[in-house]
Length: 257
Image (cartoon, rainbow, N blue to C red; front, side):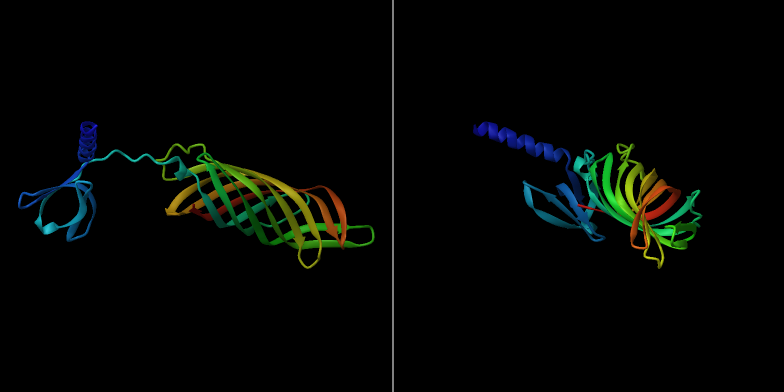
C-alpha cells in the first residue's frame, strides 16, 4: 500500500514538472515551477508541493528564463451562458398607406439571458419620443379629430440565434433575431391612444469593445397592426391600420453572471 502511494506521488510530481517553467540563475542555480508574475525588477515562481513557498527572484541575477508551453485551456460551456443588460439608440423609417410618418430617432433598453451558446432570449422596451406628419383623422360621427404629432412606445419578447457560436476565434458574433411586441401610438395632447401588436425580424452583430461591454449593431424590419383605439374616453375597433418600419440601431450590451 505504501509502495503504491509512493509511485502515485512520483507520477503526479513528474507530471507537474513536465510543464514546469525554469529560471536559471547566473550562479548556476535552477528554479523549477510555474511563473506566477513578474515586474521590471523581479519574477515570482512557485513550485508546490515540492517548494510551497513562492520565491521572488531579482531579474539582475537571472541568466535565462525558460517558459514551457502548456496545453490550451478548453473554455467551459458555462462561459457562453450569461445574462446581459442592453441600451442603445435607433433610427426608423416608415412606409404605410394610412400614416405619413417622417423618419424618427428612438431609444431602447432591455435584458436577456443566453440559455445556450446558440440561443438568447429576453425582452426590451422601445420609445420614440417624437413622430410627425401622421395624417390621421378619426371620427365617431359626432366628433372628428386630426393628428399630426405623436409619440410611440412598444415592448415585448425577442430571441437571438447565433449560428456561428462554434467560431470562438472570431472577434465578432453575427446573429439573427425575431420577436413580438405590444405597441402604443399616442397623439400628443389628445388623451387618445392606438393599440396594436407587431412582429419583427432582422440581423445583427456583437463586437467586443471592453469586456464585459459589447457593441450591438442590428437592422430590423417590423410590421405593426393597430386593432383598437381609445377615442374621447371610448374604446373602438380598428381594421387595416398598419405600418411597416425599417430600424437601424446601435447599442451597448453589458454581460454579467
